[in-house]
Length: 263
Length: 263
Image (cartoon, rainbow over all chains, first blue to last red; front, side, top):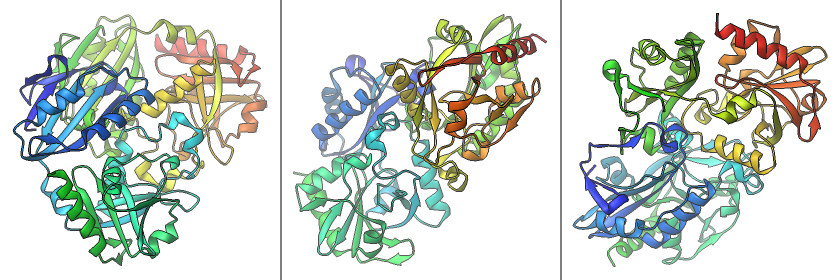
């Protein structure tokens, strides 16, 4: 951690200070919401998009959203050249901002990642009808996301892509899937219960990206695939379930996205 | 909270003291495991069973298990007549024990609860083949469990029972389902990815409980249903999806279970 600030009073506290109570429902039941942003040149990138989703996530988990996260993010980002920023709000009412160094592995992912598909066990249309599964909410109940990443590592890959029981592509544990198919970028619809990607929104303002059901067969036939997330940015997939992929369109998108962060 | 102790040094600290760092993976990603026990007459009930599962959960989440939780639990329970005890171990390495007052709503549940079934969207045999879904691990990534309980409350019930896409009964968000069917108690197998209930184990040493696939139709035809969990104990279901149920066998099991806690 580079810096830790609390929403309460917008105070900076020592990074190693314990800040959460043992009975905070964010600790006890994973009932907290978060957003991870990139900070470039003292600016939290795409902050409005992140705060919008942060609010939706909090509503899903029945967590009242206090004001002040915009100011907190700005204060946390001040003087930071390039880093990650995590905003968290727990059901116990603790709001905080953590500025962290971007891991070497994350930066390395921008050069290319190997990916394996993993079944999630859900039908692509199920979460739309079952709000208790919290589809689309970015909560800290992320143990399955982390276990899926570990499974990918066990299989010799860097990341995973979850697929549905009815043969559709969903998302990656911490990023959005976009495939280059028949000359255009395509990404699965949020109605499948996946997170509405903020980096996807940013990229969709730079190139045309169609939101359409994407089958596992489409993915297997795609010329290129990228995974989008805030801190890693555009990660070109170089190997998908053992198939080698080229990355020219992905690298062009990456350049455009990285440039947008410095605008 | 009545009492808070840290594993490190088996020290008691003030209940309102912040004890978790902002970057603990237990906070950031719900990567922590926990067990909730009942304490009766200074004794943590069925402690061995809980510690066994605690160890299995930690292994699932790749969290190294330090020694000392048995001592910590014993120290936390000292002088406590009847309360709840939660043991937690985070991926950041924080171990703690919280003694808490049993909520009136929890005690009330022993008199009878209304339950609704909710689909979980998974097939009953899926999690056995997909360890990344962390079936059977009791982690703090519990937001979906809590959201399922809220959905039950919205439907005018006290609790939920999750069902599978292929028509089987799974578990409740924080308890095990046992149905009285054709004169015997039946509970679903752990191979469905549900938590191996410690209270179920305790009850199975008191009455015969068969572990068998339990269909949604079986449940709808069951003479009685109980939900088993450590602190609430045996909760007789009085209303299941709007159908009124009798509870004599459930109440007999409850009496036997409560007596076992004072042995």
